Image (cartoon, rainbow, N blue to C red; front, side, top):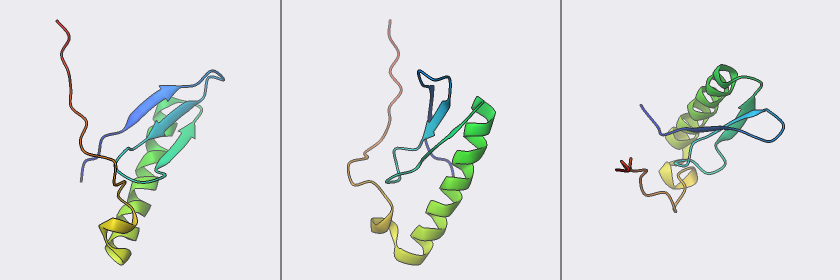
Length: 72
């Protein structure tokens, strides 16, 4: 399954990766690649939890959908 992931570099130079779909789904890495690999593992855990307890246990109720906006 595909999920939206936001990656940014913080003021200390650490890459933060988060997925707004799942409550608390975030991680970090010293490189963008490491952060993306780590978030994949987090998302796998979220999917496993959702399979056990149902989507209401892990899906953020405030998440609707991320839309891409083209600025002219």
